[in-house]
Image 1: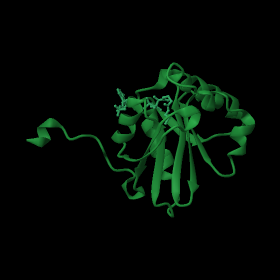
Image 2 (image 1 turned 90 degrees about the vertical axis):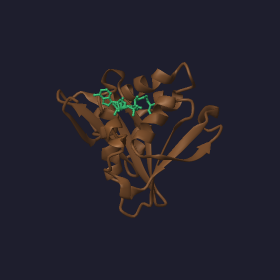
Image 3 (image 1 turned 180 degrees about the vertical axis):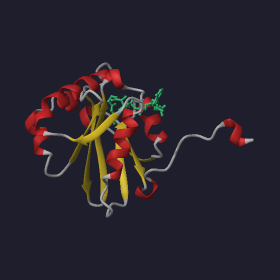
Image 4 (image 1 turned 120 degrees about the horizontal axis):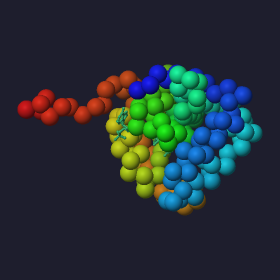
Length: 170
Ligand SMILES: CC(C)(COP(=O)(O)OP(=O)(O)OC[C@H]1O[C@@H](n2cnc3c(N)ncnc32)[C@H](O)[C@@H]1OP(=O)(O)O)[C@@H](O)C(=O)NCCC(=O)NCCS
């Protein structure tokens, strides 16, 4: 994986951050209405600053590669709006963003929660691979989309969830 750094979103980076978020979610535009993610305004994003940790992954050249958000609600650390630009995918940036936001969960939280669209099999495999387990379904949510929500025990942050090698199973 190329060298990346993960930092809090800065005010001056909001336009570039939202532009990349919009283009990342347009990947799904043939499957469902993505406007919740593609039409977020700078004002809406800025309004989340007091309640939400917003992280940005940057490459060695400073270019924004992706982002993620986390917010505590009644003891649950809610992870939202994970995205990685198309050119930077399948290089571990998504895993790095998830690891960074998980580590920011307040110690008072008893659960980490993340949801994705039921139709996105790749995303479901992605979260299972990070040690999340299915928690509940939200039928007919945004724009009548079905969501699947996953949970993780904060005590399991940092564990290695890679499958055992075949040779280890003999
Ligand atoms: C979902 C998303 C964030 C994943 O980002 P990503 O940077 O590709 O994630 P990673 O590279 O960490 O992992 C993706 C896969 O590539 C694999 N991978 C990681 N590094 C790799 C490498 N160097 N070579 C090959 N594969 C690699 C991972 O093991 C993972 O496989 P798995 O999903 O089968 O477990 C990205 O596809 C995206 O932005 N999608 C559109 C928006 C979206 O759906 N967001 C989620 C909303 S809930």
